[in-house]
Amino acid sequence: MREERQGRLEIRDVTKRYKAENGGVFEALSNASFVVDAGEFVSIVGPSGCGKTTLLRLIAGLDDDYEGVILLENKRVEGASLDRGIVFQDHRLLPWLTLKENVALSLINLNDAANEKDRIVREHIELVRLEGFENAYPHQLSGGMAQRAAIARALAHSPAILLLDEPLGALDAITRIHLQEELQRIWRSEGVSMILVTHDVEEAIFLSDKIVVMNSNPGRIVEEIKITLPEPRDRSGYEFGLIRRKIFKAMLGEEVKRETSDNYAI
Image 1 (cartoon, rainbow, N blue to C red):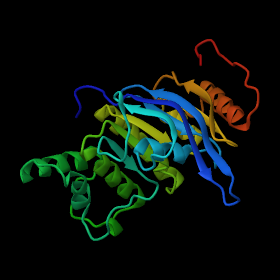
Image 2 (cartoon, helix red, strand yellow):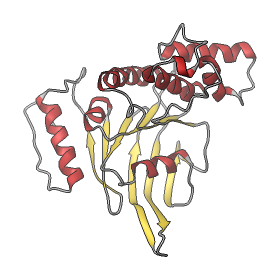
Image 3 (cartoon, rainbow, N blue to C red):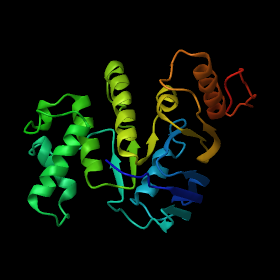
Image 4 (cartoon, rainbow, N blue to C red):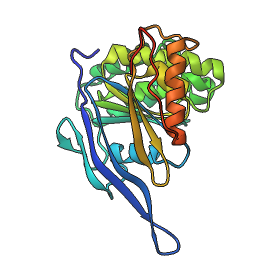
């Protein structure tokens, strides 16, 4: 639906500290820096407790108590805003509203006429392929359908960037693979920048232009890996496996050897 890509995000030396119960200070995130180019799909992977979700919350503007700078389209991120859509592991659809009413929630501050809002809602329901379920309530939708509805709601107000916090984590394996393909299709259609936090390394490789690898104690970025595999990506392919090994080694803090094949480079 977009005519041009947008949503360049820059993270500069971001550090987040919490006060510990013993009166000390816990550093959850240390000097994180990376860039998401306009229209780029970036995944953040790492072990539990490494600061992935903390970083996503800072980008979303849900927490502004940190050191460093976060810029979206060269403007400092200050508080939550509709220029950043977010989808959580739990779809968080309101159970007393229909699918189309849930999608329309993100347009509550839009001053356009009712028929224009209806058009936007209809287009985004079609985008996530839920036509025919407009009047269904959340309990009448499968887990995958509910997550697609949440994505439609997050995109309806045309954010510059979409933040995805383990949105497929609660789904069964087959549904998850299907939704990965759907998410990829939606990303290509919309041209919006996306940041995905996930524990699933294979998912990150399948979807991403770039993967940011984190480690813990304190949470920090240890490597950025550009993904240049041809599409459609073969999850069982040799090059795919090399990247998977590289990511796991980085997460485990092991020294990573540069591994290449004749047609592969990272």
